Image (cartoon, rainbow, N blue to C red; front, side, top):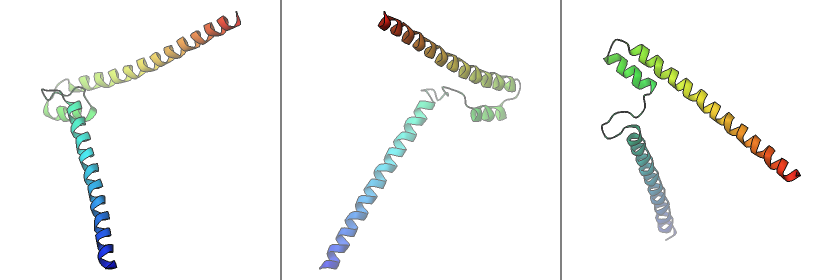
Length: 107
């Protein structure tokens, strides 16, 4: 009788582990599907251009594509610089507000 109980318990544990793995697999599949829909809009046009996408298109088309690729990489670099300037400006505003609050507390 104890063997039957152990087999049933082991089977139940394995079934539970299987259900957990199936749930995890379903979550991963949903996240991948959502990621793919985020990458492309309704017309299956990419919302942004990645380097790998540039290389894929470069194989298909010739011409001034290298100039476009350089332009896109420069735009990414400028976007990073703008983000850094924005963060620096936010810090300066915060420092000014702290200084004003300090002066108001002293007065």
